[in-house]
Length: 309
Figure 1: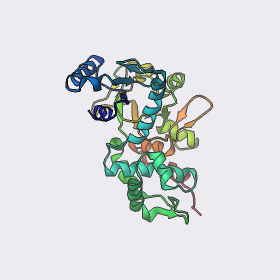
Figure 2: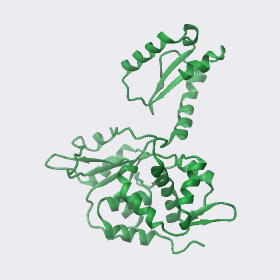
Figure 3: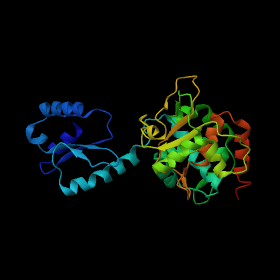
Figure 4: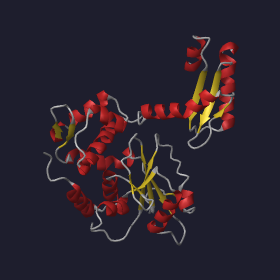
């Protein structure tokens, strides 16, 4: 209705509704569009079009698009995804999503950031960034040019994040009810063959990547971080890793954990062997979640910078 209103106000304008990865079936969408036709003036509706966009597929339109319009669809989707990242989250989720890139910068000693850079990394507005920084003030080092970075580990904020990590990261657990479940290492090899840059490995395997000498024996589970602009719960790639994997019920032992990362910048690291690694913060959260507390403490102590000048 908003698009129809804007289109009606300008007789030379065409309105295109772009649906980004809708979960509604195509017949249901057609019914909804037909319903809109019944209430919108014909001279306006004839200048409207609906486009269904799915990543990696040509856009599907109910009306023919000009070459210029078709070329713009992907750019429009990319722009709107950047504007809409995690807007559904509450204040605490926003705080934790801003805390995590600050911690990554602290681990990697990448230097201070401006509010503009933090906004670009997280997708949040300046006021939201400002509120989070105010809450982190005791742990911040503010430079004369107004850039900021963590000067020490924000212990209280961190353990609040650990307590809520399953919700903040949209974690889903999967189990293998078969008598012969595949090992995390076998699943990792299959993931490598998928060649997916939007899926990174965290957990024990990720921790070993950053610190090969970390005191870890065995791989109890496979932790994967999926980059998506919104959590929709669909992880079709798991069928290619192991068709036997099923969502785990509460209390049921799980073999694979999938965490959804909703921010414009992933901080993933690619290695020469085709594996993409989740950032240090995601790996640390996975160690806590797996109840590997002593290893999490060791991981933190060995990654933490000695001081920030």
